[in-house]
Length: 490
Image (cartoon, rainbow, N blue to C red; front, side):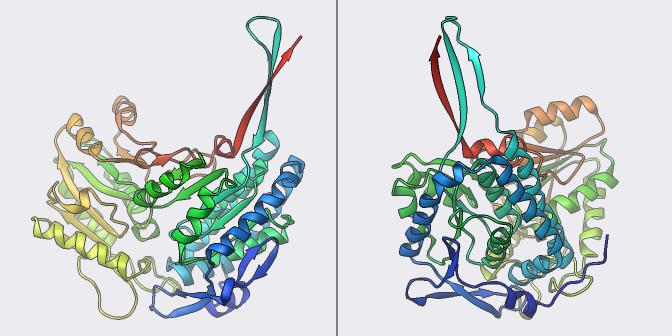
């Protein structure tokens, strides 16, 4: 693999369009409204992008609706090849896309480059799934009739992506929509619109027809999104974000009975049993906690460690986390960038302060550095009270809260005592226990002796209030397809 050669922030910012992308053309928002995009490492404004109005949203929807019939009739192989070309373009431009993500989101360049490769894989995966959509033909039980099953695209989709993985969350939704034959309106997070605008340009270059993908950047999500959902033309909503916003969108989707898939919040338990390989467990903890500075729905939120190994685990984890270099993501050697904004950092500060007030001990970190930017140090807390707010709140920051347990049933009871159920992590060398605990954990995904579960080939999603449906894997395209049954008398 060649050594990355990252362009400067100024270079990548200059290359990205700052307008709305509707019906295959770049255009200003109605009235010329714009919104700033900030650098979380400095607090300074990077640039301004178009700030869409509800009328702009309707314009984007009209373009998607107009393109739907022709796009649905496009040969699966043609859709596949567009995705494959887009995959190749992302890989060719991974360094530039990484620099762009680091500028607008803050993650270190090496991690951002990893996201670029991860994002590209969704396009490659769904380029292969596009030509494998199957129906069926069978004899019905009465022997007199036949059943023909067809798979058809659900129709125009509204895709809403978060700021923490601005490129990968776009490709994870756009990939299956293109493969299935659906047109789209994409609304990226206002903090990180640039990656989505760059992605629109790549797809246009790859040959995606006008109107199939429309990108609407806006600071007025509520005003723009609700009319799209209630108007009757959007047939599918795919949302990644907080459970609170997800509930609102579900209510807005109800009047028009919009099909929904939602990847919502998490409160991931990280369980370390007494027989765990602590080297493996600590390495897994670093991945599960520190990926993306802890700003991930899959981040380990609650560390439950058997009392016989808790002190050693916490000490090892604190040494590893304390050795990480914190700073602007564009600076060589930095491993932990800033949090996304001041509000995000304030939330982390308050959660740590609450835990300490309830008796937690800070092994490392725990204090906000002076100076510009939204930095917070990697932090390990022990002796955490179960009543602490961070036990029931998605931290979204580099804070590991360690509690102890004494037996398997206790560990499962406290791990499942949450309204969320996205992912859980289990570390043990006992095969029977690993299967028992994996089955009993109330989550959609389990990392068994690993801190990483995300993979384009795997179905990603949760249970309870962590969401509906799955993204990725062989089932990922199903969210964008309907069944049509044709009765054939013989």
